[in-house]
Length: 249
Length: 266
Image (cartoon, rainbow over all chains, first blue to last red; front, side, top):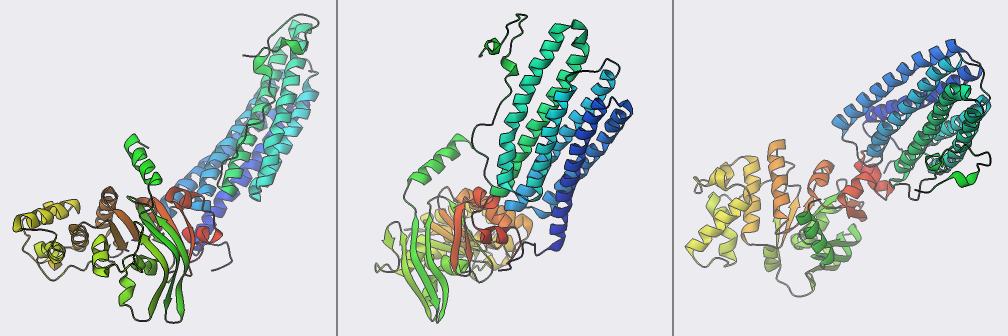
């Protein structure tokens, strides 16, 4: 038995490597798009935001390229076992990354609108949240490139932090809107931005689950961490509004 | 999975294995070809044996109906039970055993006789059919079950060797099932056939498993994946891994299995 991990047919390895590299590239781009979009918001730089919007097309193209490569590989090589898991995982991960790219593009679009309005205090919280999600996306990609299931589990748990940040930002924005109705326009955009970032975290969690399956062949068991309580929140104009405002449904 | 299928599987899971192999060691002279094989083969399922050339899969297959007896220097140790009866140590007549455990070979090997006589040979030998009418009925039903009847019903007197490769192989399968065996062993039954003939045999295997227990040796992993419910991977005389076919081809437990089925060694 050979010790090497290479296939007897070397072009098979080359095709698998190509697929792997496309994912790494897409991941790097998606991560960068998030950073740039939030930067455009913080710097109030609409030109940069336009750039982010345009860049998104490149991620979409990569996804198409990857899909074609996967379809071709399945048709011509009939992969099994870890090879099969690799191509199916690549397909799933690419669609998660493409979504992350879409959210970044949406953030860029909204920041152009926000730049027409007075500066927002909540930008700092958005920045913090985005830093965390960028880290998570980066760690997810590292876990992918090393097929590291432990790191994938670690990332999987960290989504809870993102959800908690989102819940607190939701409250912060509500407060601003109640303080002064003129904030409502900008704050609504900020809320969508926060939601976009939170969704990116969810997609990173999906990717982490896929990486776990890719490297072990089993599904990641256990309840998915969930810290987003906003679906249970009700609005109240009471001054002493506190944690009791949560209702269970 | 439909309900019928589910029930069949459930029944199979609860029932005793059809064949139980325990600590089976086979030697060709000084060479050990099989090392302590432990394998259960479930009734009414297709079990595929895969592995690189010389891994022992065909040797194991031939142990199941004592085909190794005729090979000089071959020694079989351990226990293989067919429905609880030890086929090596219970004084069972190998000829009777082979009527219960039929075999289909890699290269179609019809007798140089008519199509009719190819099928009738076994029932006559074992005295299964009492009269001409019954024999004719057996020939027809065997050919029907092998999916060959429509193609040959008008020329039962022509030689079996005149059929195409795929038809010859189905003739051999019909011949094997004519004596109403419980188990059918197949040693690479499609390796000499074209893809269409192969597909027909595979379809036939799937139909046959309703009434027979099938063990198939194949070099085509795609074939193992397509036709079998259980797959056993042999390597260097060892049984490395056995399990549900869908599990083995998506997430095998053993690195050697993974290496082999993904084409990294062999």
